[in-house]
Image 1 (cartoon, rainbow, N blue to C red):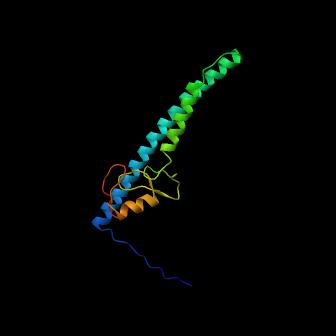
Image 2: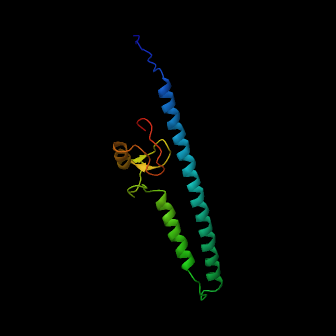
Image 3: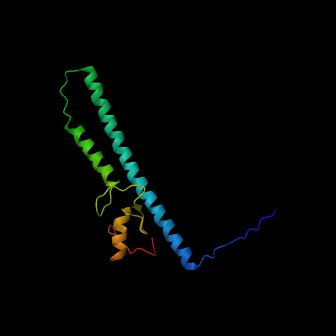
Length: 136
């Protein structure tokens, strides 16, 4: 028994190609921004880990040593702030998850709710004020 299949092709218009190029550029921009943030966070974590290991060695050598841990506390607070900066919407400060993430044409990360509100109003990124293109 033979089955009849039809090939359907979608013709890409110049506008569609431009829109896809903009989405690709935004995606790559977002990737590089996140990669830079990740590298910064990773470097901070490495410094914190090195400092913590040095303190452990001091305590092993001299259990009664008086160690000022305020620097360590400060490092942990800074790391928390760095992680929070990369995981919350810059508009409403809600946690961004993979279910509610939006990447507008400029590459910034915002939540779906804020993007919908922005699209109803001025259609500009709340971070950099660039105009959103199409239905990004």
